[in-house]
Amino acid sequence: MKVSLPPLVEPAAELTVDEVRRYSRHLIIPDVGMAGQKRLKNAKVLCVGAGGLGSPALLYLAAAGVGTLGIIDFDVVDESNLQRQVIHGQSDVGRLKAESAAASVREINPLIDVVVHNATLTTENVMEIFSGYDLIVDGTDNFATRYMVNDAAVLLGKPYVWGSIYRFDGQASVFWAEHGPCYRCLYPEPPPPGMVPSCAEGGVLGVLCASIGSIQVNEAIKLLTGIGDPLVGRLMIYDALEMKYRDVKVRKDPECVLCGKNPTVTELLEDYEAFCGAISDEAAEAATGSTITAQELKAMQDGGENIFLVDVREINEYEIVSIPGATLIPKGDFLNGSALERLPQDKRIVLHCKSGARSAEALAVVKSAGFADAVHLGGGVLSWIKTVDPSLPEY
Image (cartoon, one colour):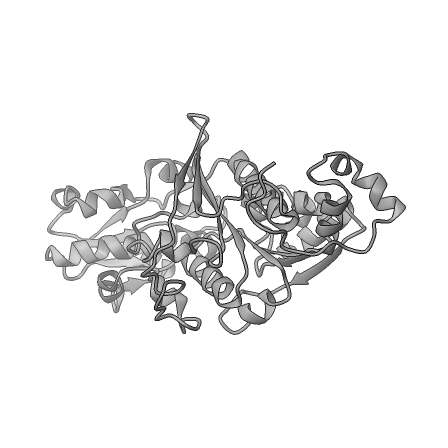
């Protein structure tokens, strides 16, 4: 088998009798063998996130015998996670994800060391945490953290395995600046705010997480043991509906601001959230002074105020749960202008979405069209559920 890169770690001194018994199906593969399994035993891998991608990744990294497995996650298990985050169970709802994941990992393989980081990954701790591991597996779901993971990995000279999922589509690659491109070579700039919906907004097929997460583990094993042809310089794209895989070459950008010939980014950015922009400047400006709470909206309705409540989510979200009296006009109709003719001139426009980001973008359009007194609901329908009607389902 082709060996394109040297093994990432040295072999451990030995395997115990218990380890030989446990990993025997690896050991009889000539390309892995005793040497490869000893490298896995000696490896230290950090999984960023114990969610959709982190769940299958952690399970299979543990089963494969990665000697030290780090888990970093700040979140708690929510019932909506269980559709895809298979490392957690019903009894884990409300428990810290890192702790829940660690318990599952230890149950699968008590022979490995598990390091739990119950923390948010930040510019203050990322360098210190990453420095203790040979390889990073990135299971994050937002652009700010992805760029931070990439920048820290490049600055520390470490490879990382990246994955991304949305609805029925997945992507995976290996970024290692010493041998190929980094994430910034592929995506020099984050997408405009609101352009790419998150999984929380657009959904994800649960089993897609397993498809991409297992590919990430496959790449991790190849890197650690030095076998096969890793996805360095290649972007693997998977379409679950068409059941098609294809890969695209990704070349190292000589002008990359981070890993190019003359890098201008030589340390972590101060604020990755600002770099990626949760919402556009126009939306932030429109929302300033024009954001109401769920209780204020309820008071408007109870007081019979002359308002026109608009839900800017998608039809399938509206069917899950909606605020009484809301008219559905998806955000896309505001961005292309077709929604404006449906807005009454004699009523105050009140916009809402799931959490407030999309309605802020729509608010910018509405205000620029002359609806000066328009407002939007901060926190969206989730805030309505939490503070006005807890009987409604969250999603």
